[in-house]
Length: 216
Ligand SMILES: O=C(O)c1cccc(C(=O)CC[C@H]2O[C@@H](n3cnc4c(=O)[nH]cnc43)[C@H](O)[C@@H]2O)c1
Image 1 (cartoon, rainbow, N blue to C red):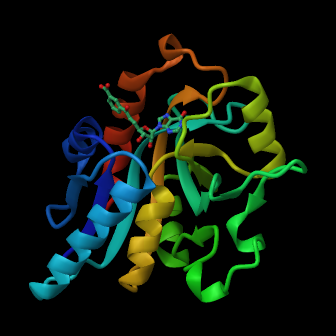
Image 2 (image 1 turned 180 degrees about the vertical axis):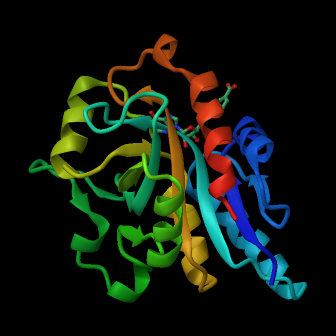
């Protein structure tokens, strides 16, 4: 049995985590942006490790994220209770319909539109990061960039704390491999009208480095 697999979207996030790691058995791999590419790449890493007789013991989707700033400040740290596929479904004149309400056979939907974090892995991360904000993390294909879409998301997911672009895909890969999943994010920007000058990447990457020792 090897250690945890930690996957990030981009190399800068992986390097920030690597800089703070305390456990040499943890593998940190940048797998790309978005749920499809991150999910496919994670599934391949898990299958290769299993085939080599060195399966991982769990998977963490980690990196920076947009935060609902009434819940978590920029620079803050978030632990996901579940990864929610927030834009997987259909639009209608009456609003968004999640894919699991479209009448498709349940067996075609995997875990549905969200995958829960593993209770034991989440509990261990919470114990080691007592100041982290804990709640659902949305997975989106498009970064939210208007006040209207921010409000729509808030209405549909009133308990969500953050949004990022990989968690649900990584969670599905972990679930297919029968492995525990968790999501660790630090907040680089507020969710809202797009303003790249408001992104605080350096602060969020430093927070990732500070949180990294909990990954063991
Ligand atoms: O340009 C850089 O140096 C750099 C360093 C670290 C990370 C990046 C990214 O572009 C990260 C992309 C990644 O971040 C997540 N993210 C961050 N904010 C949001 C958001 O408001 N909504 C959705 N996703 C967000 C996401 O997981 C991206 O894959 C650049």
